[in-house]
Length: 210
Image 1: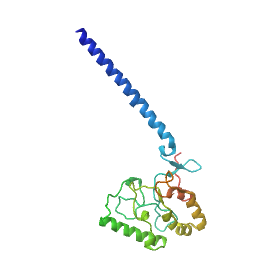
Image 2: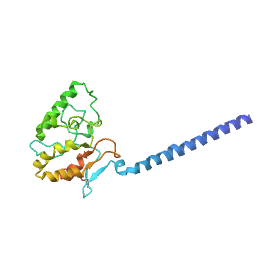
Image 3: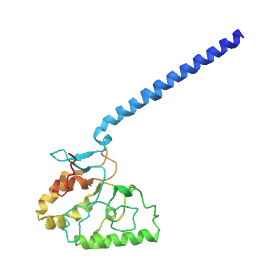
Image 4: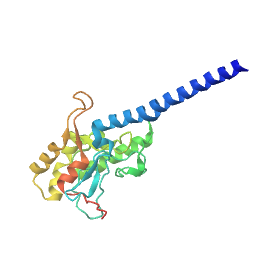
């Protein structure tokens, strides 16, 4: 009986030791480590919220919500890539549609959407359909990519300047100021942040909660 109690006591001590070790590692050290890593880029960790001079929210630099002009409204916006999940071929990016279309490269529905998008963008910006870049007619994996190619951004300069009554040189400079190079110097391609450009153009409405 004494040996049985000793064995039980040893097993109980080991169990408590394992519980204490796992509590420290998984309950304290791991969460603390994740939090410390998130502080490396705290702006992104907090949602990359963008605010105006008054502190009012104007969006997130990581979410490419495309402002869609109303009927008869001047289209002075820089447009992002389309959302990939909706039936409307030219629907703007929408946080409620954060997913890919899952249409394969040989899917006829995808080809139809691409042809519609290419024709729409060519007419909107007054260029030949062949001049419309690939990222303008295809959605990103999330459907909310905040960036577009420099080619697609430059394609829209003439329209933005005309509709917004701005010099093309100013629009071009704003786009250049909000262009980032390759990630870490070698990944991907240079890209233009659509949200930041529209904020700089003064075409984003701030939302204040007082």
